[in-house]
Every structure is written in C-alpha cells, then in structure tokens.
Image (tube, rainbow over all chains, first blue to last red):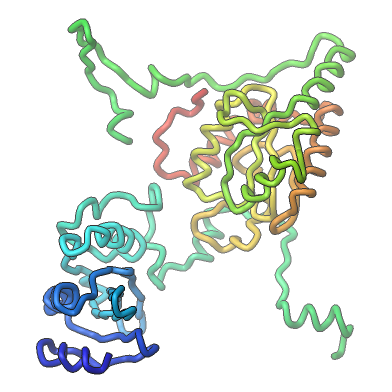
Amino acid sequence: MQALYHRLKALFPLGELTEQRENLVFVTVDAAHLRSLLLQLRDIEGFTHLVLLTAVDWIETGEFQLTYLLGNRAKRQDIGVRVMLSREQATMATIHDLWPTAATYQRELREMFGIDFPQSPGVNEEFILEGWNDIPPYRRDFNTLDYAEATYNDRPGRESRDPATYMREKLYGEGH
Amino acid sequence: MKPELEKRIVKGPDGFEFEVDPIRDYFCETPPTVMTAAYSAIIEKLFNWARAESIWILGFGTGCGAIEMRPLMTPRFDAYRYGVQWRPTPRQSNLFIISGYLSVKTLKRVIRSYEQMQNPKYVVGLGSCTINGGMYWDSYNTIKRLDDYLPVDLYIAGCMPRPEALLAGIVELKKIIRAGKAEGANIYAEKFEWYKANQKRVIHDWDMPDYNW
C-alpha cells in the first residue's frame, strides 16, 4: 500500500498515510481534489467498489469528516479517503454518477448529519425519519437523552445501577 | 401530506370528472364506539369463553422480539395447540403482539393496523422496551411506554423473553379474557381523545384519518 500512496502522492496533495492493517489504509484529501482522486482510484488503481460513505462529527474542531471507503476485490485491499468539511458550511459535491449507491449514502448523511449534497437524486427526501423537526440526530450537539425525556413519557419505578458495583454488592455484600 | 392523499379531480373511464378527497372518501373518520356486554351475564361469560379460545395473532413484528414468535409456529413449541394462530392481515386477527422496541415510524403503522382489527381485540407488550423503554430508554426515536398509545392487556417482561414466556403469556391472556377483563378495545373507544392526543404528540407527520378502519 506504500507504493500506491507514493503513486497517488505524486498526483494529488494528500495528507499523512494512516495504516490500519496491511490491506487497509486511510488518506486525507481536500474537497476540491476528491473527485479526481476517486476517479484515479476507481479507473486506474482498480478500487472499483464503494464499500461505504460515512461521516464523523468532530465538534471540537468544528468539522465533519467524510470517509469514502473503496475496495479492490482483486487485490483484497481497502482504502479510505477522508475529507474534512466545515460544520457551518456542510456541503459536498455529489459522487452518485461515479457509484449510483452513493446517492443512498448521501441521502442518509443529509438526514442524519445535515450534510448537503446538491444535485444528488432525492437527497432532500425523508430517508429513515418521518416528520423530524429537530436538528439532525447524529450531530453531537443533539442531546438524545434530553429529546427522549421531553418527548416520551417515563414509567415511574425504573432504576439504573452501575453493573460493576451492583454485582460486587450482590456477590460479596456491603463493604467490599 | 402525501400527494396521493390530497384532494384532486379524477377522470373516470366513462369520461366523467369527479372530485376525490381520499381521507374522507377512502377511510372512515367516525370514532370507535364502546361495545356493550351481552344482555345477560351468563351469555357474556359464554362469549368470553369462546373469545379466549379463538386468538388470532397479527403477523406483524415490530422489533427484535418478532424473532421469538417464529419458533412458536414450529413443531418444537407448537403454539397452535393453545388455539392461537397467526394471520397475515389485521382484518382477520384479534391479538396484536408488540414484539419489542417500537420506533415512532413503526408506531404509525401499528396504530393503523390496530384500528383495522375487529372488536374485541387485545394487545400484548412483549419485552422490556414496551414497558419502560428497556435498553432504548434514551433513544430519540423509540417510545418508552406502550400504554400511552394503545390499551395493553398484558406485558411479558424480559429482554428478550424466551418463546416459553410468550406461551405462558398467551395462557395468561386467555385467563384474562375469560374473566372478562380484557376490555382494551372499549378503553380505547372511551379514552379515544386521550390516545389520539398522545399519538399525535410523537407522530409529527400525521397524514392519515383519525380513525381508519
């Protein structure tokens, strides 16, 4: 995978290479070069399969991290291409014309993270949620516990225990 | 409101144009009514005995508990010997087993299915999620108390209960029906406004009639 990284590094401004396993690596690229990098990987390097497209919310640095994971079936290798987006201007170019399945991932990201992919088919349609009226639920500033407490009624009498402490008390009694 | 539910002008095969208001024309908006008991207590007792022996379950799995219903349909557990069977449509069934966690999206389908079932009808909550939210107590899209939205006759606790527990629950439900205490459908009719208000509080895109059998 090092050879692949050096080949790509000559063509695109790539970030550091992160080697997760010997057949799984991650590279970072800026949003403007993503499309040409994906085309290079798909058409020339043999990474023909879009395994997944997912996002991470780095609220501390005010960024979303998109991960495009591509697979090379012949060589049994995977490469993850990471793109950092600003949380305020969460818009990214669509890649549904490279892999049609990307449209579904982009629709999901639009709903769960609020990342927009203009021109992607059906990106503004509801995907899983129906009639959602709060901020996208996978954003880390969405407090799921507060939302659940405000929306759904509790049944009185429910107790929560720390499993480790509870089992210690059950097994050895108080004071151990 | 979905486009297919909006009022529109339709042209019939004979060339006539007429207005269609799907919510009013295709569904019924009349609220449910309370079913009175039979004229004599002994007849009502006979009815309840008969009802307890004819439990037809709607084959609708809402959560992971649905997987516990499948073994009951096999010779190993053979739930049919208790006089129950599964049916593919709400029109033919009178017991709704809410099998595990219930997301708001599924709740909408559950309400529609429940309202299409014939009286008298029963609801069993299977698993902790239907009782107090279970492990989904802090989830943004699953309800925590099933009895806020539907009248529940019986809960089966556990996460998940084994098929044997479900069998025991069915036997227990039969006792409740024979004792004449399974009045879920009547409670739903009596407190219809309260149930509808609770349902509409969590289902934000309410695009169906209030009662749609």
